[in-house]
Amino acid sequence: MKILVSCIPFDSGRSGISVYTREIIHYLQRSGHELTLIAEERDKKFLPRDVSFITAPKWVRHPVLSMLYHLFVLPFFIQAKRYDFCIIAAANRRVFAWYKLYTVAVVHDLAQYHIKNKYDIFRMIYLKQVLPFFIRRSPVVVAISESTKKDLIKFYKVKPEKIHVIYNGLTIVKPEKQSKTSYVEKYHLTPKKYLFYVSRIEHPGKNHLNVIRAFELLPEALRQQYQLVFAGSDWHGAEVVHEYAEKSVCHNQIIFTGFIDSADLSDAYQNAALYVFGSFYEGFGLSLCEAMYYQIPCCCSNTSSLAEIGRGAALLFEPSKPESIRDAIQKILENKNEIQKKLIAAGDKRWKQFDWQKTVEQIVDLYKKNEK
Image (cartoon, rainbow, N blue to C red):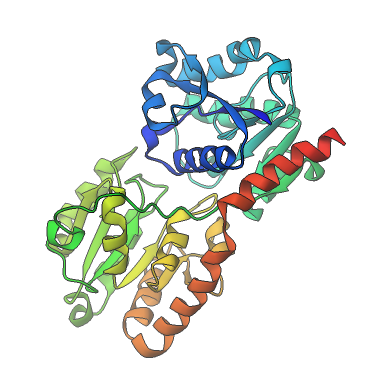
């Protein structure tokens, strides 16, 4: 099939949406489909070379112009007869004003309704007032979790029969070359003596402050044995997180390692004592599945898709309550032979449920059913 895929925005390959876009492209190609990608010039280096491109002009780099370009300009460049159907890989951020061909609009999350002050006023107006109208007009909507589907019905008023839940796959990148210096050596960590959280440093959405507060609340004798490691690039509000960490009584034990390269992921996960996913809201939460793959015990928020994925395979906590996060962490650290083994075994079963090949097959099936 000839498939058009919108890769705007791609976030320079450093977000969950970029992972999703990259993986569906890879598996669509592997399945023998012919792809044309809509992308910004600066992002083409992160994408396959053996495809056709519709390249956005440089002025699209500005967020407002990008929204307008995707809404009102791009549809003119889509020659419907050249493609079987289109996939908008991040329809919770960009959509078309009208649809010349069958389009699958993939919505990752509606975090703006769950996290106060997540975006500036203009972006909130766009996400709450403009985007819903055009999402409702799309031929079909894919939600990456049941949680996102419920939000689409509640907040965007999308008809339930138009929404299809298709889970993400699990992304395990095995680099050709490993780092000369291991992750634990690079950041002076002791194997199995640090708590790990992979997420961009974003406040308040990713909830780093309450994770730090939970760490501070651990019994001192226990806390002194561990470090708290945050891996991820600075994002909106990162300065608030860094400032709080610097003033924390545990500041010497809190480590920020920045964006984590794929060459370091395996070492970073495998040497962690536990994984703590404290985000207030996630459309899916890929790193939780990654942690389960690497067989470390996990705890996560009892909200959104995290509860959906984590229930039964991770200890759940209330993300707004540091004491709840503390209790989950403490329970795991103090029960190596019982709770840790159960969580690792359950997580090993859970991650196997998510497969990118199944994801793209289900997306393509939506088009095939429409054709019938």
